Length: 165
Image 1 (cartoon, one colour):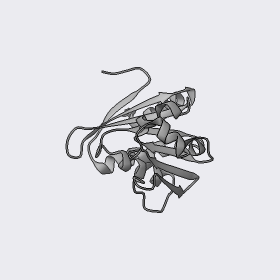
Image 2 (cartoon, helix red, strand yellow):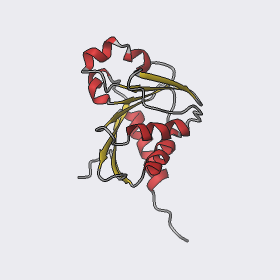
Image 3 (tube, one colour):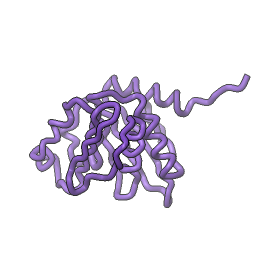
């Protein structure tokens, strides 16, 4: 079902998921928070790889499942956080998530549903659903005016039909 103020689309491959993440990166700025939600293997890390590529990160981007945080330097700092091993918001709070949420870079959180109560009011939720081996449903849900505006610009630049003369 289509919902107002969301963007719902299908990615047909890992490469397409990365490309869409890279396109989104063009609209991000320091202080932004992306909250990724999805089951194991749904494409969260592929999305992060795309965003990092779009931000000119040259280091390999891998999921920080055991280290909790990977920091990358590109056009600005990127904080890649994976909350898979943490049980809930209380455990997440003790590891210092808020230091990254209000830091000087772009924060991207995998398994963000484990820290919903800690997320800033303004953030972009990215839900990824496994449909087939490489096919994913992606839903972008903006929270706050900053991300409503960002999503509108991203949607028009990425999915608007070009009219032929």
